[in-house]
Image 1 (cartoon, rainbow, N blue to C red):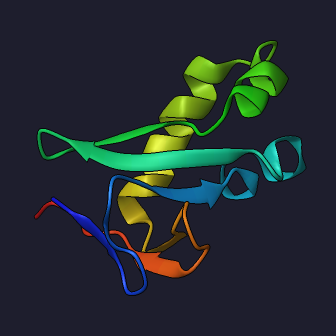
Image 2: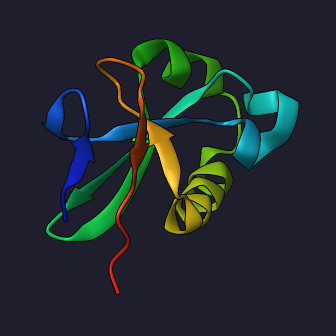
Length: 90
């Protein structure tokens, strides 16, 4: 599966705000969503996000983020910030 941005073309990942996963606790924490071997993967986007979340139950929140990503229609391009569609495996 590929993620495409109208401005940047094919991109390796898209990002979304953690607010949709952990309400205000994860607001502003960005998750990266991407495909590896056609399997949807989710991880924290930056070292700062990882540092902030170090003391949180990230096993739980990563699971929640993956479930959210499976239904995610729109995310952001990490390069230009444009909205991008995240394709889903059928």
